[in-house]
Image (cartoon, rainbow, N blue to C red; front, side, top):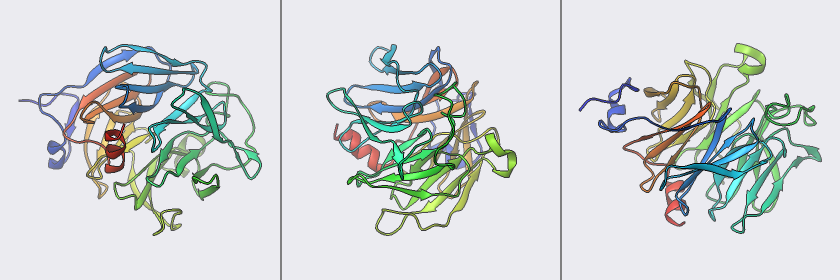
Length: 314
């Protein structure tokens, strides 16, 4: 059986991750900029953002339909689930990280750092200890396209850790525009993409950095290594699978990197990809948010153990 022509194998390890008779599926079109997908297993649907249209959408796996989940939506960008299966959202226009409770009500968790408004939280991940880690570049305040134009009160773009007791700490201060982020399966490494090329050009290469997490899991060791540099466009959002492979968005599709930082394969998509998410009943369906559209591809892998455990519990 031949691989789908959209799948490009660059290293033999990629053969073990792709299904030879599976295909890239185009599921829906109609967004201005599709982003921030999160899979909700209890409902068997995917929630994702259309940031410029100030709408979050819902793809129903059972029917294949897409409808409006929330509008207006505070120009929501990234989403994830917390340890109780609630949706946590990074909001551009709200300049906040919020949470939708099981009762459907929105709660602002954090919107200020040292009494200054956050810029425009972009992407977010919840660690196994319940802490929320998120990036805060200025894309939502740079113009009115993805939020409300405003000056940054903080004057920089940081990565934050919001603890379960309500403390907000800047854990990374040396990035230009931190964007997508994810933990390794053992949570010993935090991966963060920097898309600062949008503001300073190649002074900020389109990298994913790897930051060691401290032994107590509450901070970073302060050093980093460059995990990978994007060869087409930039890395925006990404996910880590159970084996530690990184599935990253890029200008020509989805790039898959082995845990040692080798580009082992690509899933070619005819639109610029913004973000990805594992979903489906067996968590082996990679959802792909790409500019105007939503795509998916079934794989021989599934998400990191923390996410898999959370999904089994809900």
